[in-house]
Image (cartoon, rainbow, N blue to C red; front, side, top):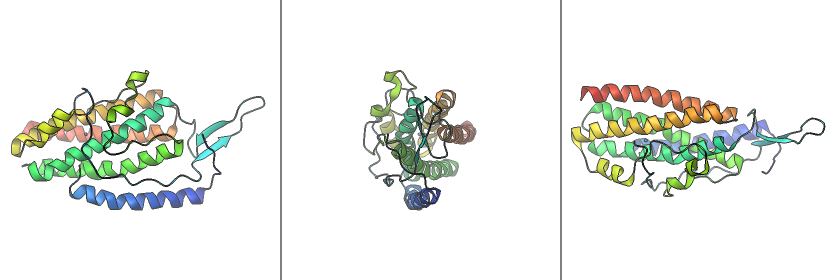
Length: 241
């Protein structure tokens, strides 16, 4: 892994630039662009490009070890460094979030209940900014960033002995959702999104148990708390339909 000098000012400026770029893309996602079962992952339908983070200039630091001990490479401000489970979680959560945006994008033209429309908009507004955060973290680690249109299964680490991607809809399930409208769409959307969110919550809980990065653990806790709260709200709406 490449090392770079730590410069807090440079890092802060780069992050501000990234968040500004994402704010613009999130507005577009909220206007129209759009998380099932644990069956085989589906290819996402989104064709919009995720803003590409610039190469980090000061994300990685080398901390010297004690006498006779090797140095360790860590993310600046991140105690403990990253292990494979941290990388797997972030790589899998990117296509997971993109699929949630694809699902949310279906609601404006199909949903009948205003509460479903509001939930879809909230999901898009919450997860679109997180996509750039996830991509930026992966760039900082020098590993592949999942791109729109790629098979999400490529980043499912379950076959390699690590936590698997959970909650992704299959291609058929996405097609079924797109083919419904009105109250039928409302019920199916809520059912599928509850399952999709439950998968993200499970993945977040997994990495908080087995990951080593404090930054990833914080991100996972945000995902777990935010999406669990949305599950509760969606269950309430679904029960009332």
